[in-house]
Amino acid sequence: MTSYQALQDRFGRNVVHDLRVRLDDTADPLAALLAAVGATGARLGELRLIAHERGRLLYDVQVFSRDDAQALAARDAAGGIEGVEVVAMRDPAMETHRGGACEMRGRTPIRSNTDLRIVYTPGVARVCRAIQDDPAAARAYTNLANKVAIVTNGTAILGLGDIGPLAGLPVMEGKSAIFWEFAGLSAEPILIDSHDADEIIETVVRIAPTFGAIQVEDIKAPECFRVTRELDRRLAMPVMHDDQYGTATIVLAGLYAALARTGRDIGEMTCAISGAGAAGTAIADLLLKAGVDDVVLCDSAGIIHRGRTERMNDAKRDLAEWTNKQNLSGTLADAMGGRTLFVGVSQPDIVSQDMVRSMAPEPIVFALANPVSEIARDDALAAGASIYADGRMMNNALAYPGIFRGALDAAAEAITERMMRAAAGALANLVPDGELMPEMMDRATHRAVADAVRAAAIS
Image (cartoon, rainbow, N blue to C red; front, side, top):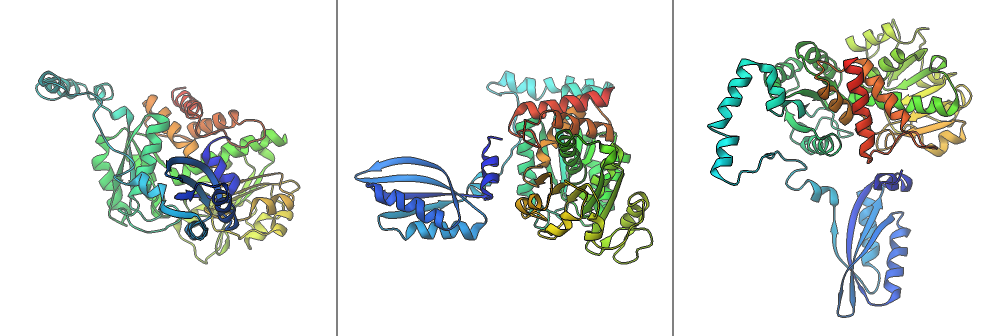
């Protein structure tokens, strides 16, 4: 991978800030600045000379850090050097989202009254009548075939939890930007201020005619299961919960790539999953349908199994019926013993090297908890893992833009398991030598996913 995201991954520093500094025009302050920032544990990216001001140099220095505290330490270290003045510290994330990360705008310029009368009244009336006579014409004469609603109530925003729909809006706008950049789709955030699954369902059903597809986003389990299931049942359009099946598609793609590298067969694989919420449930479902022999899921109370009473709900009781065919009980360590694949979508630092050693020889480890994995890469590999991936490597954004693009291009009424498996296969086929995932910044990646999904939908 060659993108800046990959650079951040290699550094293990995913928070980015820009320092603007003014230096005396000598070699010493610059060398001292670089050394001081590095001594804090931060890493340096791009260094740009902005101006030469009467014997002083103005630089922008890109700083990669683990967190905000380390970034502040780097700033203070720079400011403590003789001959260095810290002019400003800029947070690119805050600045990028200033004014919003997305917007809706017209596709047709309006430069004259003639333009206005074509795009609006009276010309638009002819288009309205055509759609009234044939509702299917809306796909050709409106933007429906390119519009996705990103629906959230803000109860499971990234690693932030239930922060509410308004505080979660920057995440939804970020996803809108991704949809447009990689799939040419207009995705509109829809914020629903309710914790009631039925209210969310009814709201989306009533506004659904505005859109060609629905992405359910960052709604907590178990409500997300009912919301997605009912919307899928009631709407004749693609509906997908990205936290569930976007994640599952990426995991399956990673598994396909790992199997190709190791020469294994998917029917030989047995899996332990840490995390029995939205993502874990969907991963288990897709892996089993793709041919994995057995999957056991664990939550904070241990293995999900038939007859368990502690911290169970309807979703987990249902889960116990179609996973864990040996009906194992016990802890996550018990679940991992002898397994060939581990998938973590839970909490940081809960898997030890001994737990990896207890797995089958040369296991595959996907430790996807963000921002800190269930086990670090070096620890997993030292314990015998043949392949390791974390949540930064296995990014949902590799899958969902192309899945929705392909589904809309095919005029599909649902996103099916076959379409998700096609997306996973397309991603695995694009993986460069020595990697587990293709390059997300390559538009060809998303086009390949879209083409595969479209073909699966219409065949």
